[in-house]
Length: 213
Image 1 (cartoon, rainbow, N blue to C red):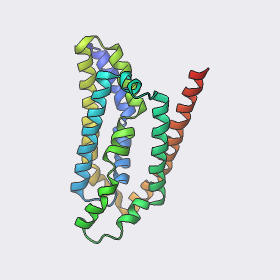
Image 2 (tube, rainbow, N blue to C red):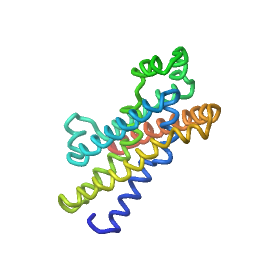
Image 3 (cartoon, helix red, strand yellow):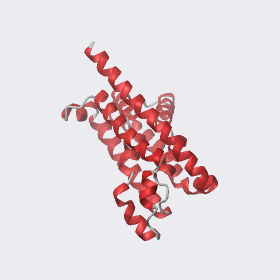
């Protein structure tokens, strides 16, 4: 993990799994109707939470899940179910309907307090999901001593920084799409999130089947 080729491979793996370009429209959809200041706060909380979670799994790995008696397949199934509920909100715009009664930004910001997506689903499972957790555990296991573990942490932090910058640019992207464009993207991503959630569940169930066999 100390050589350049290994670092490039780790960066590519994390970049593909976290998928910063793919997270931007999800962030826009999940923070639709919020003020720019609230979006920035959510972006900061989401990335900080993701960093803390990644650090925990980087240092402790599978011991964390084993300690609470949770297998990675079970984690994947649970994440899929919760993500599917979020997808339903996006598809039917329930979150936006709850906000529509608020006339000013201050009232809207307080209305959003119960619908903060920074921890779920942004930090987990969209940023630090089963794939990212498995990758962190795998790369840490292959790392050569403390220096190798630090290299994995540095690479993940770099990719997470790219995610954060992408979130900060979401306002400009949202203005470019416009209200109609955001509505279309929200519905489309709701469908994609629902499909992703089902895939999480199916993968988790398949892993259970293989373990049982």
